[in-house]
Amino acid sequence: MSASHLDQVHAKITLYAHRRVRTVLDGNYASIFKGRSMEFEDLREYTPGDDVSDIDWKATARSGKVLVRRYIAERKNNVTLLVNTGRSMAATAPDGSSKAGLALMAAGVFGYLVLRHRDLMAMAWGDESGYHILPPKGARGHVEMILSTIAKAATPEAAPADLNGLLGYASRAVTKRGIVVLISDDAALEETGLAALKRLHAQHEVLMVSVADMDPSALTAEAPQDIETGVAIPDAVRLHPEVKAEQAAMLARRRAALTRALGSEGIAEGRIESEQTMVHSLISLLERHQHAGR
Amino acid sequence: MTMMSWWAIPVAIGLVLAGLVVGLLVARRRRPQGGTPLANTSRFLALASFGRVVRRHAVVQGLTGLTVLVMAVGATMVAVRPAESETLTTELASRDVVLCLDVSGSMIEVDADLMSVFEDLVKEFDGERVGLSVFDSSSVTLFPLTDDYEFLADQLGLYAEQLESWDWESGFDYSGTMLGYEYGSSLIGDGLAMCLDLFDHTDQERARAVVLATDNYLSGAPYLTLEQAATLAKMSNIRVYGIDPGWASYYGYGGDTVEAEQMREACELTGGEYYTMDDGGTVRKIANAILKEEAALIESDPYLVVYDRSGRGVAVMAVGLAGLVLVQAATVLAGRGRRRSL
Image (tube, rainbow over all chains, first blue to last red; front, top):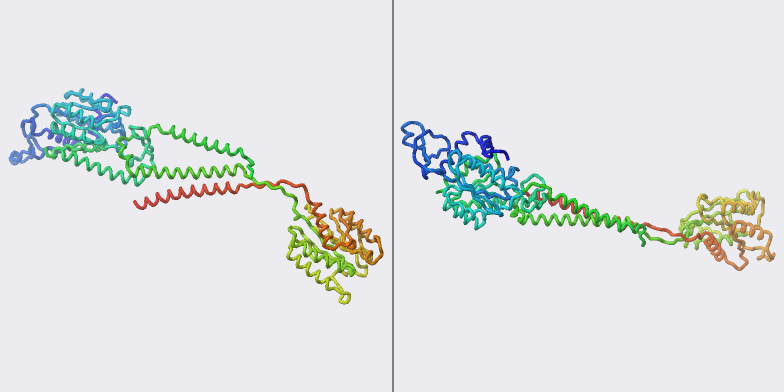
């Protein structure tokens, strides 16, 4: 890993997202905190990405330009990353890259936004070997350290991941109120995990970022193996039409079940499949979070 | 059933075991090397279709292995060279007999008997060949050496009948036997020489015999005397068996006539025998005696014949191959059917 994860993430964001898109991302991030601990400051011209409800219609009618109200944060917001690190995060994503890279970039995008908005970032992470937490801080070096911690914790040599255990830990350990961004993968969310997620969501606002796993029946490369057990998955079997069909049906069923479970709690989920589409996926996630009925 | 290369069995077992060991080693070495790492595959691996396809592949591979094993067994069965052995003596099949008959008036009765006896004998022949030549002033080949027994019985029967119905009034003339009668009749030496000429395949090792029926009453001047003809026979390793009706003693001349003595000498010179009817013998007995004598002469040392019996091994290999083709074809067809249905 090179010196600065943040610089890399910034380079990727500018590579994959147009300036206009970045403005939208910025606006969507800002509006997460809308209405909480903010004071009206002044009016400025509307730019795409601004919440339509921020438009000051009277001022717009008077001036002839679309004007939105600007707020100033009364205090700094907390963004807590909850990263499901461990061995499985080092596995392959649908675009063939490492899931760890996608998770790192997702965390980096939030780090970039946090720094831009002078907010604070904390992180809880861990696997079967143990869970850890870093307190919220606003320094660039702190965010940088969070990213390099993720990079070190999501390797094939790490212990097996434990999403439900991590959620249970986080529901007790994350005390500072704010936004909780859960970065996990397609690991199963069990009853205990869901209960912990509900507790977290009651106290904070939870967003879920799912780094997608490569579908074994869709992988074109030969002879994949399970990262946990090392057992090879025979090509002749995983690419068999019957298996593909049943896998596709099962994936659709599971996605629908997860969406239903999270939706009934008012938790928005975004799914990340490649670096190219990440910024758009995150924008869409932030928009859905605003409409999730808080 | 013996196995000529029994050592092929341990060799085959060793090869199969070595193949298995090498296969396992290769499979083991290949396994840990980094394939694409995938996470959260447990639900995928637990799919019902996954287990079903794994079992199906296991069955196909098991059947494939089985057919290969069957082929290996078949190959081993061929490699050990299963053989059957049989002790054989030379068959009578390589025996040629030429009936050489003097058809001068004095011999008709004996000739008729000889033909009817041979008509019976050929029914038991298997592989022997019989030819028939008659002579008087000149020699005529009625049929050359042949093993067409139906034809032989037919012809011999026909001639025997013709000879039996012969009488002095109607006369008897085998077309061609009276050519040059002005130079004499019953030219025995010439007749025998012509009979010797019937033997073919002189390059082959065959038992050759002439049954010469004559009273050896020469009336004329032949090119070859009986002794010269007998010498020819001896040179060609053909035995001459003489049948003499023995008229001399029959008519009371008593003792051995000069003719009888000449004939005996001629026959014995060739290694054959001389028979005379006045020993109270019948033509049948004499014919049997001749055949027995010949059989004793040509019977060689018994020898071992070994037959390879690889047929069963080849059949097993064929079954294995057919099984392999069937399994593979069924797999391909099943795959095609699936693709179409999707």
